[in-house]
Length: 417
Image (cartoon, rainbow, N blue to C red; front, top):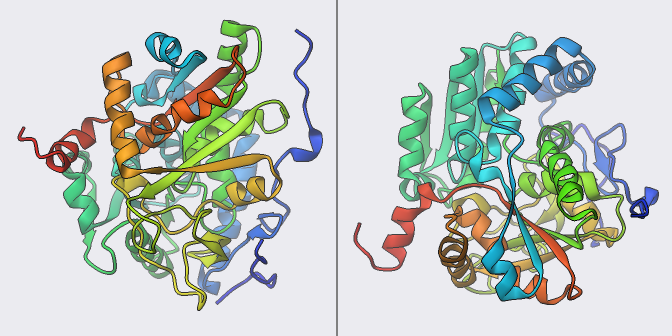
């Protein structure tokens, strides 16, 4: 089943100071240290090779880049603002800036990657796009890109996530996508990915799998990172213009990890900038009560890649829980695992209750209603700010807006809409 012979990882003013040794690039096999690689059926290897070659070529293709950059500006609405959080800054005694991916067309950072991959698939002469989605934002983004470009689209989504994210299901269907509910397993993101992979194996000749995060077999982790790295490039330029210096820390939620990696990537070589990811702490420490892979998981192989996975000592992948459908996943992107091993990135866990508090905090203090995913970063904002110098500067990534979550939050809090 595996094309990668390497075994699973063992447990394992002045110009800003940059540490060249910390730059994260995968090797030729798509490995970040012991993580990454390809663990897929042999039938998918030609498609992955084709995708790798196509992406490497188009990165240097001026016509492709001109079209993509034009759509980033005139369709998605980039650059997104870097907003100073006045009241939060006053309350926390540090300078808090918010990178506003919630202002992208479709309401989240997911469109950056989805549009890039659909353009790439068109150039590879694929006529059909499939995708998985948890919170629905990647599904909406993929359906949007397919409607714009004119390709067929099928989205796989767990039925529990469909219940939690009903508005996004309706949006996908409005855009012409076929949404397939998955009623197996935990009925969440990992089950949707399983079905998408089965579809791809069966229809690999004419189908592209538009994977939504920095996960899966090579080249997806690096390709998705590259598409999302526009977030960090913009933020770096914006904070230097606003503050005349780099931030002390970056803060972002981490499910698979694309919004976080998109922000982190431009700062990885800057040794003085802390990279802080926030996982879903759920409502307890036992398996099935959270989705904190670095605080309860172990290295292993899952859904095409080697990384940190919530699994027991027998290697059985465990169910997860999060109030946020987009963070409710049993594994994390391999580059995040590598950065953690290197001591370059640190990861916190935010409970459901803390995330809900973060949701209300940002809405009431800054008039921004964040997605439940982004609320996990806000839920740890005070803790991180307190760890910074008194003149500290922090950028928090608001990866998406919370329109999709208000009905679910009202239900959880016993309110009627």
